[in-house]
Length: 61
Image (cartoon, rainbow, N blue to C red):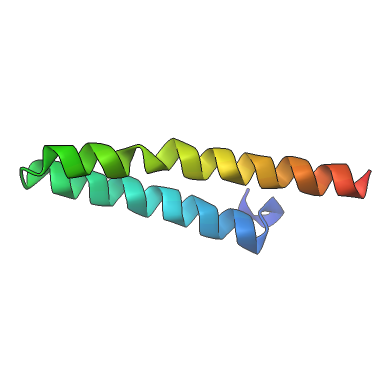
């Protein structure tokens, strides 16, 4: 499954996952506002990855 992922895909996926984990850690430590702020990064990082994929596919066409 992960063989089709490029290095950029893996880095963005790891960044999104770490952002999610860090957000949860902050939330359970009582830093709710900081956790929400960092939790908002997850869909932004994933959307940026999708954007890069679209741009790359358009160049290859």
